[in-house]
Length: 116
Ligand SMILES: [Zn+2]
Image (cartoon, rainbow, N blue to C red):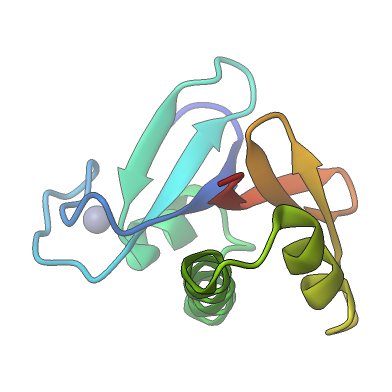
């Protein structure tokens, strides 16, 4: 595995890992190569191999956020209300980046939803 990989987001649209082929995954972590922009959707274990700072704990936290944002959108909350709701929870920064709702941590942005 060449180069540096970072978490781009969490997806439930794919259920198999691009790295090891493991299937029937509940969620996949979308990893992006910092140099080439190439993306791979992988299971949480393989995500940890690609970037040692990616833990199962951090991916399940992201999964929770992603699920929450999707629920709020279903309920009819606007993007602005969702961002405010997320910000009220504390710790991280959230904002709209293009068509995505992202979590910003230092220089890293992670997609946690799409603008409805
Ligand atoms: Zn895998």
